[in-house]
Length: 110
Image 1 (cartoon, helix red, strand yellow):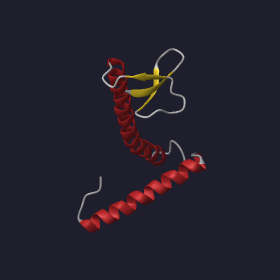
Image 2 (cartoon, rainbow, N blue to C red):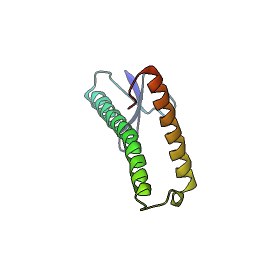
Image 3 (spheres, rainbow, N blue to C red):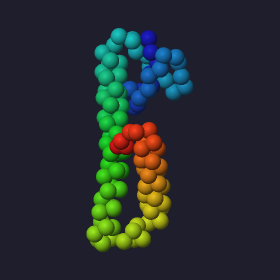
Image 4 (tube, rainbow, N blue to C red):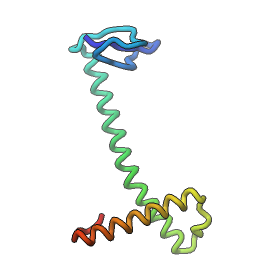
């Protein structure tokens, strides 16, 4: 048996193996409802992980877009908010340091 909290429409909000404050029901571990909830939770987690991964890739794309726009004179670097410039500068320094360290190790940086 697991302890659950349901919303006012009866949907599962939280599931625990031990009683907890706010719980308002129990379910059998082998129940279909619990199985469906766990599968949906894993699917949401997988999709969020995918978004996080693509966010990291998108950051690099945006850095490259900013660089191209600045190089072509479409925008001036100083047009960017200071917070954006600081973050871009920090990332540029970090990438340069990684490239330097990678070359010492004989590796190609990504």
